[in-house]
Length: 431
Picture 1 (tube, rainbow, N blue to C red):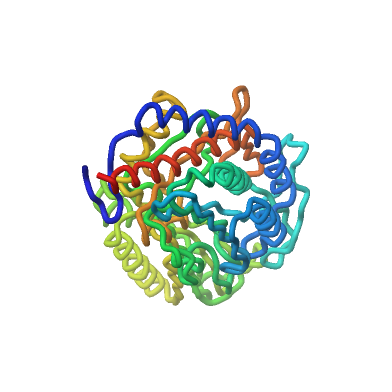
Picture 2: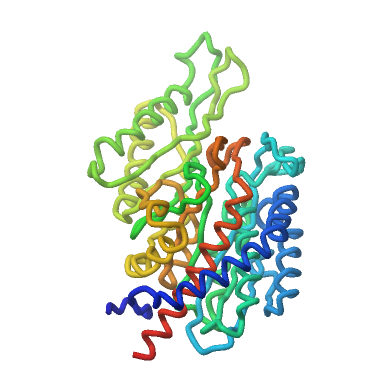
């Protein structure tokens, strides 16, 4: 037996107990499937951006109240927290789902596809659940229904965290997991472990994936203003050309990855926005760049930020211009607790079959589940979502296509993971 923090690592549940538990959860999943998939359709058809998840939060709160679960609303603006106290003594654990959608115009064949439009950063945009948060929210609503039905048998307390603004709050606002943690969502009662899942557009329905240790990257955001001197396009000698300087900066930033960092340390530097100029024959006085940096190692993060400033300084000095760099450190890396991962993977294998549980490489995508997992040991796994014979666009695209069957698979997986963890904890406590 290994002790990691407050987590006691043990073997599998006894076969008879596991079989009985599987039967109960499976029966409840089948009984609840139509209702919970109906919630998925409702959430998908009515998506809301970060810190604006009013209807989604009201739906979640109403559902939890109908189950007799204690609720708190208004956490981090629109978050909902439910507490289910089991009939047997045991640990406190938490499970988290994110509720927000994205400014993407949907292009799917779903009869319940979103037609919602709203204002975002001064633009009229479509709104879509293009990252699967409708799946995550409905799965967690289903898990709450399952476990509320098993309340008397549950050894411990489960805290259901429905989080807003995982994709980031609007500019100038606070939000997401960071704000929830700052507001004390993990206190009173404090969980000993936190669990979460995320759909994965590269995996088939009926499969799940996991990564032990580093799983998702830290996400930083940079904004750069390169300033020169405006002139006629036919008289470049009278200008200080920010377009040329910006071009040199974009290329030079890639030498950080190729020449300043250890080749086995993962990182990404991406310029996603280049904006400047008003007319074909005018050299502008300013060019704006914006992008993201993804890392796992704090020293790599420090090096990239330092080298970006040095490169900008050198290129703009040589070109006769100036620069302003706003480098914003965002979500930290999501690190799955290794011992907790080892403990829970056999549960997933029991539910899905060993051949359908896939160990995944770390990704450079980010997840603010990291804020929870930095406070207490966390396990975050990926849920297959692509139906046979179909394809899905990638995450954050108009053709992102998550199948309804992923809802019931997610319910089955997460309910079993939570119960297994609690039963194993109690079993160890009695030894």
